[in-house]
Image (cartoon, rainbow, N blue to C red):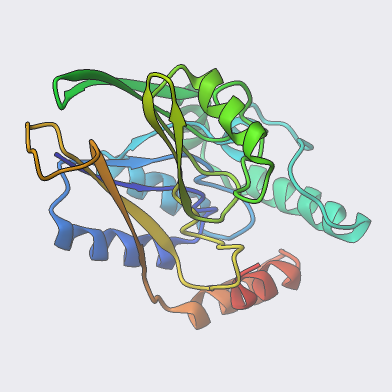
Length: 253
């Protein structure tokens, strides 16, 4: 069984379209979005419509939550007072743009999805969430102390915890008395923050059948995709949004 997973589109339609086209070559059995469909770009309605039209199974990100609830200020990462102001302006712009049916869709998205498998004759659980098992706002960065990441995996009560939110992809494996447990961050489609401007998505292959040559019950691969970055940047330049968001796209920050 094969899953394709992506996160943090942030209204960047050209990036989403490029990822969607590329992931089809893997013929996934399931496709998931781990939240933050909207905000900080111009194609809010178009991205939500795309997700709905293609019946992509999605969960709620912190930006989806804020916009869905009609909040004009909600917490996310700010590096300076200027960035905070530009962020609040982006929220106001998104709220002025989003259609009522799409806003209701965001409001009704689930916070988490949990799945149960049997692999290598053992029961497994997988949790999909945006931030962490305990908070939609928590950032599980790869560089955090190992004890903190292990605690996050333990709090998920799952063998596999899959998240987004940090905009930085990684895959960590931890040994527990019960066996190996995985923490996977699928990165960002709309605004990568790891220094690479290209959108990223993840493919998880579940080795649910008995296979002595398979050492683990899953394997993870990350794929980068080029897209029309110039179109995306120009759209911001011709909008009320701060040029800060365009510079972030170009720098992968």
